[in-house]
Image: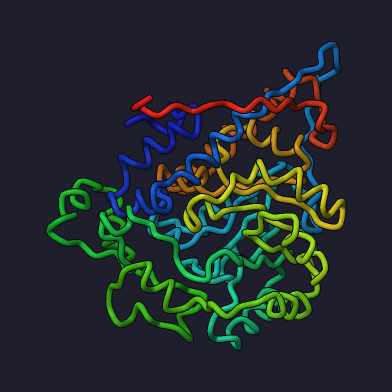
Length: 392
């Protein structure tokens, strides 16, 4: 198994995470919905955009400073909200938020976190965003808003692409449950994940810290993750609910999961200040377009009324550069930092951030651009790539 210092890209961190985690945990990070076409396309779509360099430019200093969600970040990307980080490492959400703070970027905390929003807020002074669902328990949603205000969160992010869980077949095949359950079928996988198993004996609390006081479904015993999600999410949520939430928050308000110009215009009309263009990492609607392909039509539709954040498929610093050149204000990463977390806790997340930051700085210098704010359409050329299958 390579050490963290021997991981030279996000793919290396993924391989290390696979070695360190029991199979159900790794495939929960790594998998998508149905045939996983959308998940693969999220990354492959970046290959359709070529970078056009300009030479004889002064690139002695590269400025990655980014203004988004009412705050200044030292990186043009931040950590997406991802659920249940305790599954992957005992440092859980706290290790990830400390790494984000070290790099001067924002940390997104999920409603489905295994650390409370108050504990995350107390851990570091860095900027934070809380990702929220409008659950069946509307009073819990209202309570989240007040707790976030009291704890000093900079932004609120409403995820709208999860009226029910996608068909994540890897979770079914690998017996993914909450809390984790060791069975004869997965005994070998758990038994050979020595570090993870050791820390399980020290801290076996996988409860969802932000909802446990009102919804303790897991207290009834292990249950399939899809069943848990479907028991809590509300299929009746509409634009009126989103408008109500924006009024309750009265600050930077993000809607995550939109991909069409029509929905983007509607979001601006009801009070959103930003969009996270996302298909949930290819984990929800199979066949949904890659976020990088959605930027230009959405930007044309909303102009500067909304900040656009690209979420999904990013594995290289050059992917972030392409998204910014297409018109995004920032990007966010989920799997890349989770591979790092699983690989080595806080240090692993720092390694992931270091790799992406270094790749961005190097590629910008080679592109002839000294500031992320100078990236634009003139730096891109669209050239669709034909992907062949093994049978072709």
